[in-house]
Amino acid sequence: MPPVIPPVPDADDRFFWDGVAHHKLLLQACADCGRLRHPPGPMCRHCNSLRWSTQEAAGRGHVYTWLVSQHPTQQDAAPRIVALVELEEGVRIVSNLVDVDAAHVVNDMTVEVTFVDYEGTVLPQFRPVGGS
Amino acid sequence: MAGFDDVIIAGIGHTEYSKDSGRSEMQLACEAALAAIDDAGLAPAAVDGMVTFTLDPNDELTLMRNLGIPELRYWSRTPHGGPGSNTMVQHAAAAVTAGVADAVLLYRAFNERSGRRFGQPNQRQSMPGLNWYLPFGVDTPAKSYALAFQRYMYEFGVTNEDFGRYSVVARKHAATNPNAWFYERPITLADHQASRWIVEPILRLLDMCQESDGGAALVVTRADRAADLRHPAVRVIAAADGHLVDGSVMYNYYHRDLAEFSEARFVARQLWDASGIGPAAVDVAMIYENMSPIVFLQLEAYGFCGRGEAKDFIAGGNIELDGVLPVNPHGGLLGEGYIHGVNNVIEGVRQVRGSAANQVANVEHALVAAGRSGLVLGRL
Image 1 (cartoon, each protein chain N blue to C red):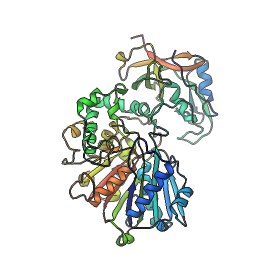
Image 2: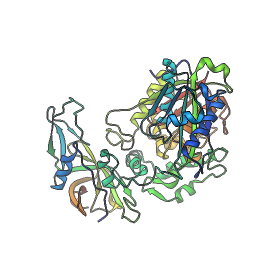
Image 3: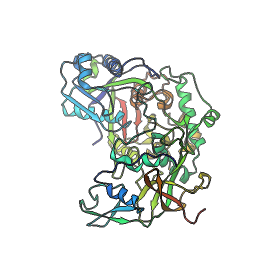
Image 4: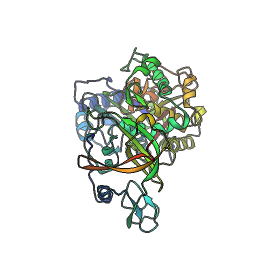
């Protein structure tokens, strides 16, 4: 398990990290116009509403871009694959790919969410659909 | 409106660009500022405005006291990083046009190699927005930018070797610029390909800008003071910033299409509209490059070549000193030094004056592009 830098939740994104702790990928949805947004923020840029709720993502998407992060966090930490995942719901989220070798990662590959506990910090991660 | 009628850059000044200045950041600011004021043929007492970066460690009032500027009536700072190099000029141009200042000192000075190094991994959460990146290992500027660059490589079949062809040109230019840290030290493409991966499979060491200690400064004033100057005045024809909804400086992942630089395209449109020129009228371009791929994206955003064509444009020799569009004749941030792009503005001034180390012939229009900001400079 690589050490990770834990998130520091605030009033605008605590729902997301609370959801992750319960293995749910929650997206912020405008309570007035219904549009999703990520990263979260207090106001909907489409209708300027401050009212919002959450919607659980299906957890599937595709890899829009990716890279190999060498020495993440610490000099001796193992490499991690970072991916910008575009969810089926249309929003993008930065995460990591697990259960796949970097040699097998390709743009636009289909992935699904999984939750990994890194020494007490749970993060949403993504793995190839159907193994690979 | 991005166009200006009566604004000039009157003076330029800088320290040496090194890896260990051996003196305080405030001293670097003082040295660069005094050199720029003197280059303009002015005295510190003529300065009544100041602009720097929000990131700059040097306090205006302390600099004022050291230089002996008796009265200051305008100051401002520009947010985020490198785009501030041009945005400082925009702030100063707006200030002198509005009459709130007569002569504005622009400065940026730091010990970015011997002191706090920007490229080192961020080990802690310094602001809430980093929750979306730091826990996932996106902890350096190289990684944060590379995540977007990878889509560009994928869509247009661009390789790291293609990026290396820019680095070779930058180092070739730096090799004949005595101000450059890499003076007389050119590289080959094989050197580039042998340098270690920084972010695989996107960036190698020789794709990265330098880490530098140094200071750089400019003086901006009204065109009607040109007669008093020590050197030919350089006109600020246009100065523009460009920011878009869903944009981010370090984590620009949310525009639909990441294989283009949307903000740079917006800046280009403003500059062409305001100056009345287009890419064909640019004689030399200074293009901010914290990393080599950003040159490719800006060449395409400004319309110097089509989308995905920068690799062929560069490989064809077009950005060399005798090419269609000489780019970074001083060696850029890879070859000369990294003073947050302010040294690129200084090179733009030198190219228009005709006093650059690697002078391009008959420069009427110089472009200074720094991603989300840009300048068109020309003769008065």
